[in-house]
Length: 183
Image (cartoon, rainbow, N blue to C red; front, side, top):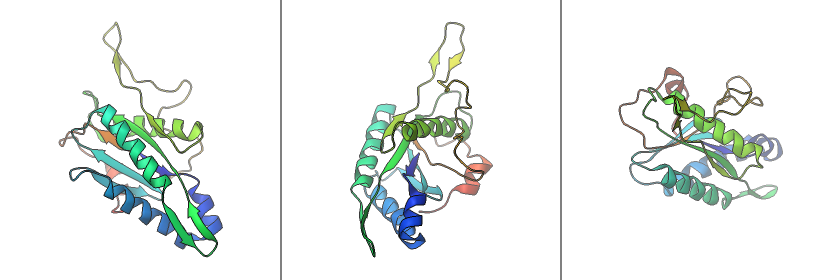
């Protein structure tokens, strides 16, 4: 998941036209740094999803860090001077028990929220599921919270995801289909 940091402030300070330019610049810049088989999509607002097929978690984290770095180097000319901005990212890998994209997106969303909590302009990897002694799986949810919900988000907010090791046969949820847009 990739979310432009302080995007509301960009719109409020520079206007929605500059906000639109920032979204376009992120899409163009990120696309230029992805492989041919990777997929970038805008989920809505300032949020993007990046699918990284046949990619290990370690490689996905490196890609997320690369995207974070190149986004931080974007400079837009505005009527009020140059604008630079950053992005926060959350990374999650498909797990064998994931039946739809919702499960992995929820883990990536939780990782993105950790990036925001820890000061923004960073990439955070979601914990990998680990087997427990009784055969269960520990997902690494944050204590006291649903792992996917950002309490500061308003209804309709959607954040994007960088997913690694994506199988081609995992069905997209109806919610994901409704919010996927071309950048």
